[in-house]
Amino acid sequence: MRLFKVAVGNKVITNLQNRLCVFSPINNKVFGVIPKIESSKELNLIFQNAKKHFYEFQKTSFQYRKKILLNFVELLKQKKEDLVSILIWEIAKNKKLALEEIERTINYIEDTIDEYKNIIKSNNRVIDESIHHIKGKQGNFSLQPLGVVLAITPFNYPLNLLIAKIVPALISGNVVVFKPSTQGACIAAYISTLLYKAGFSNGEISCVIGKGSEIGDTLIENHNIDMISFTGSTKVGIHIAKKQPLIPMVLELGGKDAAIVLEDVNIKKVVKEIIKGSFTYNGQRCTSIKRVFVDNKIKKEFLDEMNFQLKFLTIGSAAKGNYDITELIDKEAVIHNLKLLEDAFYHGAKSAQKVKIVGNNILKPIVLFNVSDNAKIIKEEQFGPVLPIMFFDTIEEAIKMTNSSKFGLQASIFTKKIDLAFEIANRLEVVTVNINKSSSRSPDIFPFGGIKHSGKGLQGIRESILSMNRIKGIIENS
Ligand code: G3P
Image (cartoon, rainbow, N blue to C red; front, side):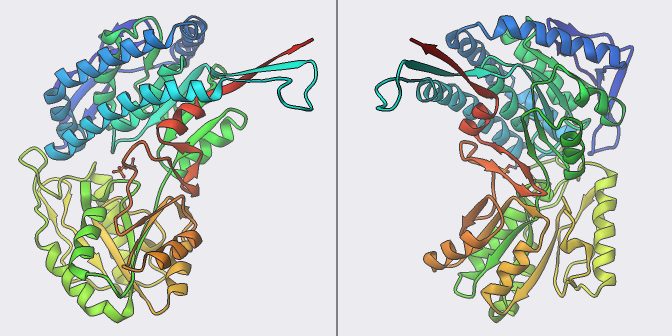
């Protein structure tokens, strides 16, 4: 068991009188213990202090904020091994994926610093009499930070998605209160102490630890919040939007990304890519491929190849090696997937694989076919290593099936006919379509977001910065 400190405003808290215990999915035992927030009074004070400090922090220079962020990058590099070990034990991410998450996060910070400079240049504008119909006016428009940003982050990318909210906020001169999910709270607390050590030690950041069910509403209702960036479930996203209808908000919610496979593809290659897109980190990515639609003309070859290649996925504990399939985040996640499987089989689905749990919380990957439209797996997010494959006769049908989901995050199209792929892409009700690759948020510099039940607003580097600033206009009249 490991004790974590947490940075809240201008203090690092070590007192474990009120604490949150985080269990490891690897052995279901307590992995980390962190000081938690108990009362609404404490929480309100955190926001009050954050707002107070914002008025000071917004006056700091870009160079000052950049320097602290670069100190933070250095600390991330120094602590890489420790970060990897926390990611392995707290969320059962294998070492290779954990390292990738850290690397992409470092790139994210460096790219954000560069992009902020460009954004400021292109958004600070003077509009005056050089425009023929403007007389006696000079409009000075510039970007200004919003104030207190509340970041709420999920378990699956607890480092990257945290930084992707905190860093665009801080570089712009906002202050941040962040609340990680319980699974992911250890790494968030650890990161808060690194940010503090790097120089954000006067009240710029506050990490709030606690169960959403206990402090969630007090947290999101606070009147000192100026912006919310949330990644998590659609249910919670809608709840937040209802509680704070007027403040700017970016919501990254669920996904049910489809892959459409046309008949002209190299089946071996496409199956390999879909397996990667679907089963990386056990399918626990919002961008995992969660439905596959294949042209009926290649049904047999596609299924045979899928069942063949599935056997090569390695399965084992995240603590023991770089296995493809590791522990799901908790027992509930296993149960959720088992229920979806049971329901799919009840509705007539077939599979060449057997349902099997290995060790603790590890569900062997399963591909389903003959899946009925009435099965829950068609509509609900599985967030696990279970993949339904359906077949179509016409492209119209494939488009209709893809758009039938309430989610609208990303989709993939596999074909050699690029013009046709563009045509289909333009008709899919999602934000991003990937041609001949599986869905993915990365590279993080790309704009990323969802429509329908997948969310609103955009992330990405430029988009996140813009979402955390507003235009201020000062008009000089002569
Ligand atoms: O889970 C959501 C998302 O951030 C995953 O990122 O790059 O693996 O698609 P990526």
